[in-house]
Image (tube, rainbow, N blue to C red; front, top):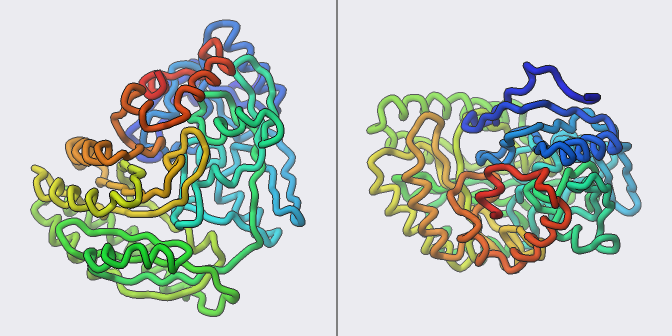
Amino acid sequence: MAGTAPADAATWSNWAGNQHSVATAVLRPSSIVEVAEQVRSAAATGERIRPVGSGHSFTSVAVGDGRRMDLTRLAIDVRVDVDQRLVTVPAGMTLRGLNALLASHQLALPNLGDIDAQTVAGAISTGTHGTGAAYGGLATFVEALTLVTGTGEVLHCSTEEHPEVFEAARLSLGALGVLVEVTLRCVDAFVLRAHERPAVLDSVLADLPGLVDRHDHVEFFWFPYTDRVQLKANDRVATDDRPLPGWRRWLDDDFLANTVFAGACRLGRAVPALAPGISAFSARALSERVYTGRSDTVFCSPRRVRFLEMEYALPRAALPDALDALRRIIDGLPFKVLFPVEVRFTAADQIWLSHSYGRESAYVAVHQYVGMPYEPYFRAFEEVATGLGGRPHWGKLHWRDAASLAPAYPRWHDFQALRTRLDPAGTFTTPHLTTLLG
């Protein structure tokens, strides 16, 4: 078949190394026409197709039991409309590549998470987000998209063209079809002033509404077994007048945050009793710093220490209760936790399967170093988060199923009906999607 890869390319694993699959064939289409042909061929023979991005999800959302589709060779003309602040890119482009493209045109995405290795399609389809009370996830920046459905039909979707499909396909876990092209709403390039400082958890929580309102982007990392957090606030400023010296960026973001932290995690894995001391040391080792930089270089940072993660979007008012419960969970575990807990904030949106559908959210992300026990920790927090009305991040570990998820999403049944219409043969179905969506 045209556009297939050799058999030795069939084995796949994700970034964290906890998900693996072996495809019956690897498809590498070079055009939208070829994508549609390959989908129709699979549907006609009862085969399944799973599009795969860069493997930065911790769940098995990218794991399929049929053909795997790699979109890196897809030839899509990149179109940049500087006046309208719109960019159209292939869905397989990475966020890193997109950020560089936008910067060359004096544009930027309004917000980003802290990792830029994901593909555009993978990021929006699983609900990737940054932090900022006025900003939704990356899917909220999508102005239009092109989708190849399970029948091989090519749909160009926006608020004016196939609007119902557009609302669902902006965040669809790949269940509705193959995203091949995405148009994103951008803003003029901007500079961020980053202020990162140690703080006390209770003080941060007491002032949290004010912090979230005063700053464009706020997040914090709580270090287990301590009362300490690292608080980060990013605000838009007019001038890049305080760039971070290269040696300081290397020291903080490369050496301390990756090399030293990796060594500390290996030590904590070998001698778990040292974990509380390591956490306390990590909290004290991070000093205050203030600097400015191009937005994407401030938002995104290197992450080379491997970990597993679960993240829940909670109603914002539920955050203190969630963190109180989380402290008790960690203190009661029969093993130790080596990674800090990350807390971020987003605005409400109206995307059907968005974690922030209809409500302002606080996101709580729990992590564990690879090779350490994690499931009892994650499951215990999931029980708490579910009881507080939490919705799991689609790209991060959780154990929810269709029966428990349906009540959490007001447009759940509308999504299911649309899925049946767009993929009648179940060409994009996987075991994981069957669990999640039914």
